[in-house]
Length: 429
Ligand code: AMP
Image (cartoon, rainbow, N blue to C red):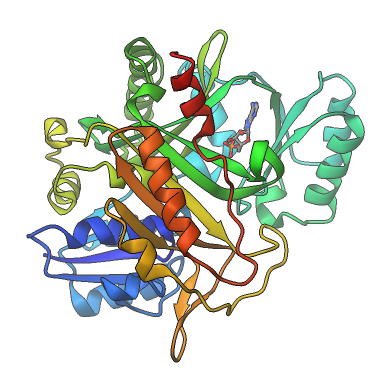
């Protein structure tokens, strides 16, 4: 098989890493890829969100299968363009990708199908209407921009003044771009978060192993939100009883709801959950694998990814073929100093060979590029040091040992990825 992977971050490197291990695969392109992906696939300089450019490339090379990593090409209609031409592709249609592309669409969907979620107070098209509504809603309050805002569209407002400031920046000063034109206000939920991702071919679905990610930049969940500072996976995140509740109250009603609304869904569906005192509730849908959740999930994979994804594209997914390594995995993200604010690119990265020599470790590249004589930083999130082992403690120990071998100027990473899981274990929970 010849496979095209669309995207160029850590998630796409994880996909390329596992596809490359399949005996069925003899060629992988990645558009645009990055400095690390270049060792395992042919990187092509195409903007992943440019549907016309990706279609033109596929027209030329005829991939047997295309896999879309990020949300933007999906929201822009890439899979529709491929399906019109009968080209096999994994990913939801533009319409189905609205589950991620529009928070209002997704909230209305959840309400229509009685799927547990935070209570919505209202949706608004003008700042003046939001300010009026703010006087009658309880705080803390969650404010969500309707459209894609590169991770900056959700704000947990402690009080009226902070809420007003966010709305003013989003709706009046356009700081969030077109995604901030409409706004939704909802109840604040409390609890632990869990990422539950399924793979579906429209008819059948298979759950992937559960993960938890860490969004804040500093230890102890301090500082601003990022794209994700790390993630871990262990089956203990999802005890049997909770798994059953998620299946019967959330996953299956979601798939039935999509079918009833005439929106067939194919590809990865990410369900972000808050585990509240009154049961799991949906925080958000994403129409793709999470990043860095994908890195932790794929590290535990024990099946042929190329086979399963071509089954999905052809509508013959057999969920029993998805087998997982027991134990756990972890991904620790190394970032540029200053991220998620301003940072500098072009810092030389050292120590990768020593890190990758550790058995069970894979260093997945996100923001890296090949310069004349070295690999250099090229983004906020630079590397995802990923490890799988017999339990979470061992997986974290491997990932942190590998991270300690790597160096670039300004490098930062959290020291407490998965710490909560190991504490629970120590307490015998
Ligand atoms: P979303 O993109 O909707 O998942 O929001 C990003 C993050 O905001 C989530 O991962 C949660 O940490 C937080 N969040 C979103 N909605 C809520 C809510 N209703 N209550 C509390 N936290 C929330």
